[in-house]
Image (cartoon, rainbow, N blue to C red; front, side, top):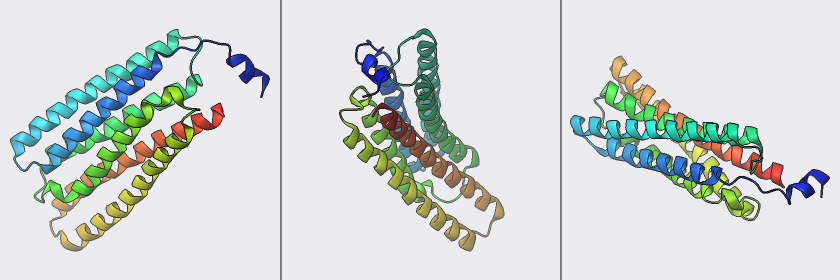
Length: 216
């Protein structure tokens, strides 16, 4: 065992970040659940209401993220690398931002094609959000539950690959069948935001795996 890691065993590390990450990721799950309701809804006014809720959730997420940064500035001994604490919080916040952006674009563009055509991707975003929330609850036991956590990180990576395939299939269908150029652009931008959201979830998984390697 390296000498610095030996001494770390005797240092009491600040645990206040764990509940903040849990709150941050549970908030993301709420946004993803509301995004699914939005994409399943055909009534435009009800879509707007769902988007309003997502916007409120996103605002709350910004507040939680800011709290993590504030606590980081005040904390001397952190549970893992200070930069990693910042990066993880930032990536979770960015995942939420892209969920919000997907809902915003749907409501803003009002595409003529049914939003539920994209529900498979939305379901996978929700699965990503739930996996991230499950991982957040295990952060305090990162070294003890590393195999289980890495397995969940792999599932997030698999989702990203699956959504890449769905994204390509949807765009192929879109360019072959949509004759209205404006509608084509609308739908392309919406599916792009959805695909970007799963990319951001994968970046969270990448951060977690990097932290595990450093703690090993």
